[in-house]
Image (cartoon, rainbow, N blue to C red; front, top):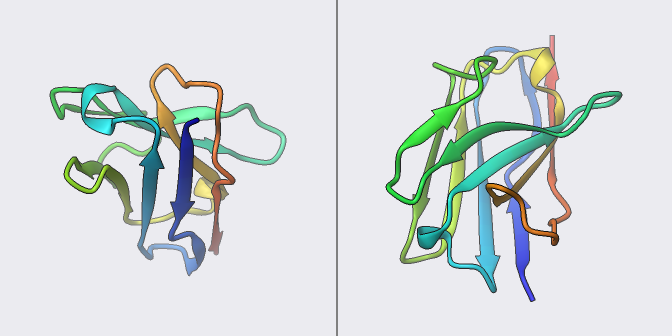
Length: 114
């Protein structure tokens, strides 16, 4: 069974930074396109950053230039470096494959104060 564990969220002031981590078991990150998704109140879950099997990063326009996705294939861990955070980045962040497989982790809450 796939298990995904996100961590690293928290409360930060606007303009600040956070680094999210995603540890996986039952799924090999290096042979999948992997992504970071977020779910904000009243909105649908959206894919904000994706890293292809070839380690090519792709970003949603809303985070381009501010977020960086990368992974450590040895540790089977993925990261999201979030810089210049804005209040509109407030959400629960999840990692999963792209397209997502059925098992989701608990997510990690990111809160940005203005």
